[in-house]
Image 1: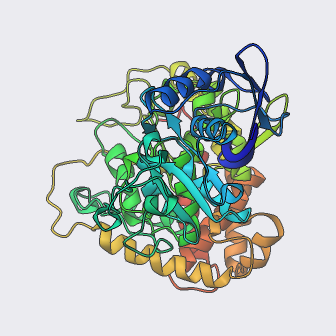
Image 2: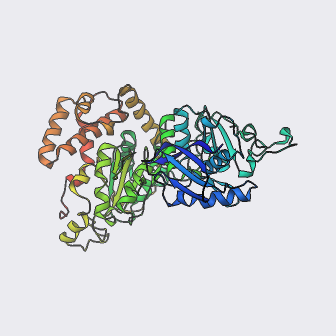
Image 3: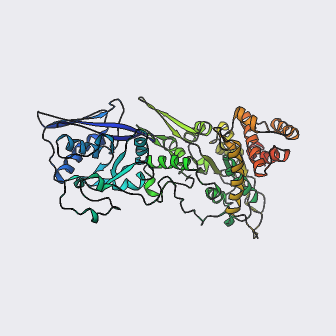
Length: 530
């Protein structure tokens, strides 16, 4: 047999793409050609495969070898094809015969000695194989736990290429199923899961960070509860040392756990980014919290690359993206947030294709009111030394359109004096309030594409927001007095809907509108006001 075809896969964005690895052996001067738009890592795979085959006791064919990666019009990158190329060569030269090769997906990177190294994105590739009718997947042992997260597939874990060598006299009863080592037969490489792979395993919650550690600031905790209940973007502004960062970092502790569908979605993103091996215990069930450094580029924030990879907005999908000290970020990086905040996804176009990444996150921001941080302070506190021009220049980093997309602007003042809080509000109490409001929203939006109030817009918002006449009058008066934009007007309505849900009210009342307006402090004063 001088021809073989095996199936492998690669990542395209965060989704897997099926790739057929065709190997042809022909007479002629020995040389190896890889075609089908491979990148440099795939072209270098020839040398890795050659060394691995020789070092494992096989014979590398001394013929004219052509390796085609089909479809040929898709750019391929990465090292996930190493094992498929090696098995294709061994099958074409008659050195290995694997049962059911046409329905077996092969993924893995080879070391020079034949050992298998894990690759990123295995979860998306296994999900692709399952949807395309494949019955089994052969992966490196380091990817077995990740591959077992999906049910309905037979997972073969390969530790070393030598395991494909024919063995004689081995005792199957002595095989170590946990490490997936054993004879060459694929059945001896099967890895069994000790649990139901369809059931996410909850990660241990971080109980060290609790809102009871924050003394006072009850109005900010109330704002955080509203933001968590309706997935409303939040900005905290105040002088240094008032606890802005401390308050936001505890926000994931009051968010509800991911649903099974959301859990699989988030886990696939982390798998594609190569970050899943940092987590243990199954599918991710706690909502992500991402806090990038202010030196991050626009590409790092939304994703990029020749074949784009997910950025911070996608890694924060279904969770929280925290931008600490917002004016320190470049304006270019901040402006790219406008599309994902509106559309809840990111589209990156390249010459051959456009890639779409999910980006439905809760944006949280902290900033000082001015460069020195003490604008608005009164004696005996330190007074601001910044001129109105410097304050305006400092706040210029956050543009009007971006500010309009932030539902809540909340002031975090410095307490007038040290005081003991006899009963600080805990994360558990806040989470119970959030879960009650979330259950109301899930029931209301059942059968629709919406889940939370923060997602509403247009006609859906008008249908859902039943505003009483006195509340409507207050909203109209505030609209003219504060000079609100139509986007800010809608966000006040969405905020009011969440506040009403927290109060278990089916109608939006005047007090709900009034509280929502209080969370728009940057609409109520100018930077030069004192």
